[in-house]
Each structure stands twice: as structure tokens, then as C-alpha cells.
Image (cartoon, rainbow, N blue to C red; front, side, top):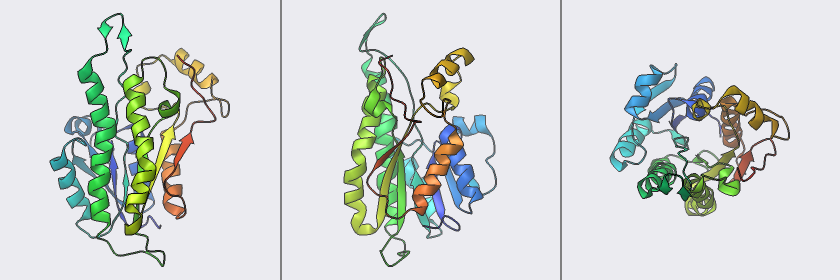
Length: 253
């Protein structure tokens, strides 16, 4: 699928993976509608050329439908990339007591249900577009899991459950949407240099990087964006989760 000239949705578009993806897609000629909370856009400021900031909570059906309608108005919405997410941590039993149920619900709500909310509404809009080729292709949805879906660490029970759910949705979503010519792929990043890492000391970041087999460094958001573009270009990739982690396998802690 050619990215130039299409409309694309990117959630979590004000920072991190989402901002890098929105920038790369816009540079490739897409008209990008970047979803994020209003507070996220207040902090990020005005997005770059080719990117329209959309204040939307991915857990809200009304917010997402309004944003999808805006992105689909030109009739050429072909791509949705789900990057919005949180990484709040807590152990099942810890020094502060038992894991808070609302915290667990919030992580599942944003990371898993929010991803599904965007997937379902974007898919409906993409399904109404004209086919692109003799295969009947119409578009692509890319979701974001994490290596924690497979190698969840101490304190990651909610995060691992949410990202494991995203990975598990990939194949049935691809099968559900096959008749409409919509592919579904998931990227499971390893340790990436995003704002989530901002609270970690440089020394600890170096120790994390040293645990990556090759290349022995943290991943860059631009590399995630590069993979999104590669997935868009490769029409036979469908229904799969790809680890982007430098061969990292996370230790228990």
C-alpha cells in the first residue's frame, strides 16, 4: 500500500512512538490525524506539517468516532496505528498492600479496550473505501503490544495482561476483517527511548541497554515508525505480532 496521498490515524500522537510515527507518515505524504488527550496536545504544542491534532480519549466511543469521521471525511482513510498506552506498575501483593483494582482496570481500559475501540471504528471507515488493487486491499491497522506480553516482569501484571490481549486480538481481527481487505498487524517493542523512560536514571538506562543482545542499546521511536511504513508496504504481512526488541528476552525483574 502506498502511503503517499492516504489519510492515517495515529493514537498517542503527541509524544513517543505516536509522535515519531505521525511525523514519518506525514513525511511520506500521508495526511495524519494524530489522536491524544487534550492535555497531551497542550504539552506537545502544535504538530508538524501534514499532521492534524485531534483531542480524543481512546476509551471514549464518542471521541474516537468523531476523530475517525474527521480522518475519513476525504474518503481515503487507509491506515490506523494504535500507539496510545500507559505503563503503570504494581505488584499483586506489595509493601502498600494488594494491587488496586481500579489501577488494573485503567491499564486494561486504555491499552486493550482503547486499542479495540479505535480498531473497530477505524475498520468500519476503511471498509467503506474503494479497493486499491486486484487483491481487494483497502487498508491496514497496526496495534502496539510489548515484549511484556510474553516476558512480563515483576510489577507488570496489568501491563502484561493488557499487551497480551493486544497480541491475542491480532489473528482474530485479521480474520474478521479479511473479507473487507483490511490487514491487521501488531508490533511488540522492547525497551524504547520514549517519555515513559523519562523517570529512569541514565545509569539504569545503560544497564537496560546492556541487556539487549544486539544492538546493545535502547530502541528509537523512529525505528518503530520505520516498521509501520514497512508493514504498509508489504501487502502479504497479516495477522502477526512482530517483536522489535534486538533479541531481548526480559528477566523476571
